[in-house]
Image (cartoon, rainbow, N blue to C red; front, side, top):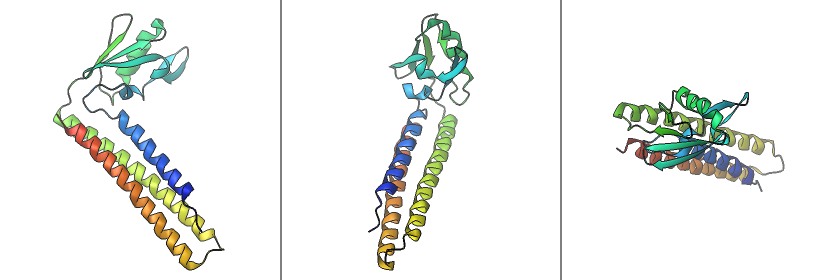
Length: 181
């Protein structure tokens, strides 16, 4: 019998990675994961912002970044400002950095939705690659009868459809959240 546990695990990993990517997508509400992709140069090397500072959402329109070392405040503010995909303008008072989250325009919402849909396609390509790997393994397996191979191939296709549907539902929920005013 052909075991699809490994294939399921690969596809689940793709979906988890996709969910993490969707957390980074801006929806108009402040969320600490919005700054997850920001890299800051501190102590002569680049590191993720969450390793150089504590990030909290004070309310729906404001993020508060508290550096672990106050001497890095300028570098952190500059790194947030430099990330053009975020379009944020942080302000610091010497102790903390306040990052106001401006309301999204309709045009910006559509642009964010379009960028998120590109991530959907990347995830679906990864799912298809996992399916192709499973099919190759199935072709190599010589000790199986044709009937067993056909059943296994059908199972792999059902698995692919299941995980593509999960990606679509995640994206639909995120898209609705992005487009909601």
